[in-house]
Amino acid sequence: MNVTIDDRPDLVIIEGDIAFDTGSISPLLAPLKNAYILSSKWTSGILPYLIEQSQFSATQITTITNAMRKIEQQTNNCIRFVQRTNQPTWVRIYAGTGCWSYMGRIRASGSQDLSLQNPGCVSQSIIIHELLHAVGFAHEQTRPDRDQYVTINYNNIETGKENNFQRYLTSEVNTLSKEYDITSIMHYKWNAFSKNGQPTIIPKVNVSQTVMGSSVQMTNLDIEKVKAYYGCT
Image (cartoon, rainbow, N blue to C red; front, top):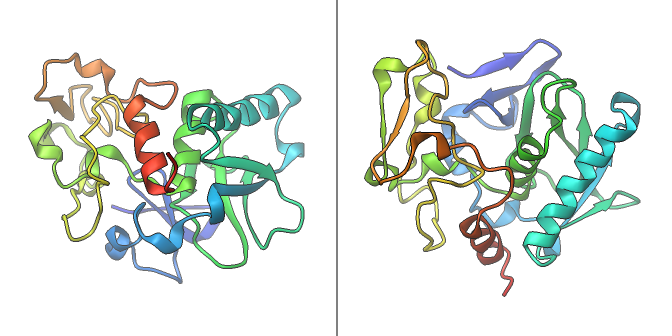
């Protein structure tokens, strides 16, 4: 089930936090608009942004910009966030309903939104996760090879939320020849969309299920993937 937001009838949310314009693309075609479509890259890895400062406290704005600096530092400035001046495309960060972002750069000119509900979404891990969607990255557990690493327990998933666990085909995504990362900051939690508090994702590798979705910064593999996607060394 795709979700609409009362204050944003112009978009739908899939997989819990990925936005699509209702008039531009069918959510059923979401796999075609994923992290690895070259046209969705930000030029030279530079992502202009504008924070709606009246909607956040000074401390929260610092938390947001610190998350940006963390990505820059971890990727050795392969990705850079700059305050928008006159750039034709930019990300508007505002306190909307829920935590969500578009995937990659979605248009040649104009703004695209990234929502950090206030309170609830202004924490480092959530901000980095949503910023990496904006950079162009999908959820880790949607990879074509995910069933080698995790089991999806559909019996525990809320009715109507099953499609949040769709697995893309190899023809739809490029994994950049990098390994699956169960600890990725882009991975769902072990109990995502659970209807009964029981696990919806069970690891097949020898790790605790609680490591899934618990990272507060990019993992080494997250960093490698960003650098590979944007052609950094």
